[in-house]
Image (cartoon, rainbow, N blue to C red):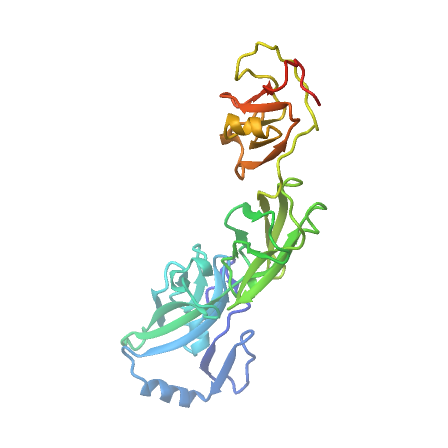
Length: 382
């Protein structure tokens, strides 16, 4: 057997083989999971003679963890099948570039091309629990008898190791939740994915929140057909005017030993609802007005909100000047409609002193004039 300095034996490789008894003694199993059935040499020779020599396939199965280093010994066909170490030629027919075979001993080794379970074409789109199988074929020629080659078909069950970390599709996950959402409502979080399978796949999710959010949000994980679906649960009342967004951390971990984990930023954006009526910052405002000011002249400009007052007609103003409607754009003085997402205008009644009334001005400011029934008064009353 060729046993170069770089050759390694894969300790977890296992197979079921038949071999002759040597020197009348039992030999131990070749490794974990390996079994040897010892037969008398004459009986074994009889079985070999009865078997067709051309086109007949003898099947052998090895189990090997993925990602083994180059020149790792998977199995020895000559030793495992009881053929002599000399006088036979072994040739790999199917299995390159992942495998190589020693022509004299039949030893099967890994190559520089690593056997990556997740990268094998044969193992793509597998159902959960299905084994990953790498097929190989080796022809064995008896050089002494110069007979026809004997074909040996084999399978390597590539066992998964925890060599991949579960990840979310994006480092930042955004969820939009209205501020009037009922307590107990659930919002699905995008799943994390793991190229590893079985126990090395996604095992758990964890939510990490700061003090401002830990009483408002929680995590619930629903399991369906071996899939874990994380869901954000609302546990408190949201108020956009108090806090318009929350930054949480969602963590995912696999079931490997040791486990692998990663995390993503979970940003919760609180959507505005029309739950607040507009109001003035002060109960009254004062402004100077010349008696000869033209209609539409700007008298006062509110410093923070643009509010427009209007009445349906002058007759209505004269009949009931204390009741006027207003329009609140929902925008700060320095804002434009494109710079802020607003839930829309708010309308409502406005009570004013009876001797004053307001008109809508073209520039959107407040136009305040004295009531015609009152004589000139250059100053508005509080």
